[in-house]
Length: 141
Image 1 (cartoon, rainbow, N blue to C red):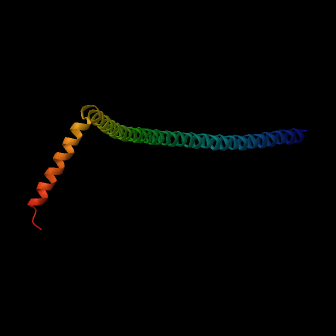
Image 2 (cartoon, helix red, strand yellow):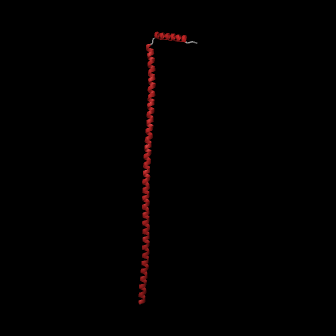
């Protein structure tokens, strides 16, 4: 009987050793898995931070570009408006000159119509004719 007990104890010890070995393997495997997952988490954190940094740089770049385009657009509109104002001034001056000429001509026309009668006109014509004759006599051919 002692042999049977001894075999049974040996079997139990061997079974415990196998279980301990299996537990040790599982422990090592769990450590490896934990290490792998921690590495993946660290890598993921780094990638996330890189993405955030890139997004910040891109957003700053975009903001600067949009701001520059906005200022350029405002400058172009300012120039365009200034050119329109200059053109409007020039057009206004031309219109004023044209109207002034028309008013002057109308005024002269009215003055002539209202101030010169036929007698004065005939005297003016006669006088001009005499002056022309006199001028022609002095010209040597």
